[in-house]
Image 1: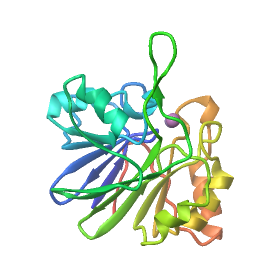
Image 2 (image 1 turned 180 degrees about the vertical axis):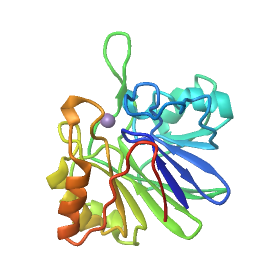
Image 3 (image 1 turned 45 degrees about the vertical axis):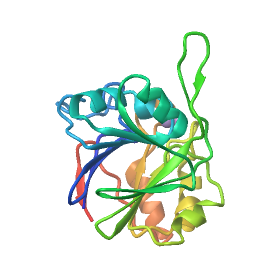
Image 4 (image 1 turned 90 degrees about the vertical axis):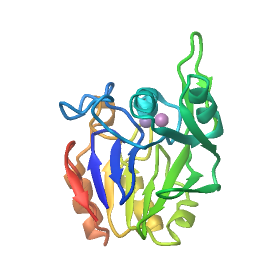
Length: 228
Ligand code: NI
Ligand code: MN
């Protein structure tokens, strides 16, 4: 399985039979590699953790351009369905077997809304996304605080965990280390940092701190891929 990072919390996961984009943000993401656009990023599914624009601003364009299905909580699914996208609505705790593998929405501790004309429109609960495909289990934590139920996500064994470290809007590096203690993934990749000054963090320093604690972490540079 191959994972490619595009900065912020946006990744492409290539399984044997499908291309999945997590939290599509290419056009409002200063770290997005040149040439990676909604027009060029071919995909079959778009997995949206919550409604904030920095996690779904390009979901509709990807769905329209490539015929991809948007998967997210019920409110997000209805929001994009009303704009003509193909969607699949779920809610935390629920899983569904897609042709490429199984997707389960997990809990996250965060909010979920998108900008409206006067005030944000609330879009359900913020979630994490667990993907099982090709015998591997991959967890995208979305935006979240540290919370003890993360151990429930880790109990089946995670091959890869994508965890926010930016602080301010999500857990910061210190709490993210504790999250790794609960998740116990074979490998983790930090996300949701260095997009704006408010979430400036040192990815390699986080990886080193995690290593002294017994966790394997790889900080990917936007555009970089890893096979696992
Ligand atoms: Ni958010
Ligand atoms: Mn965010």
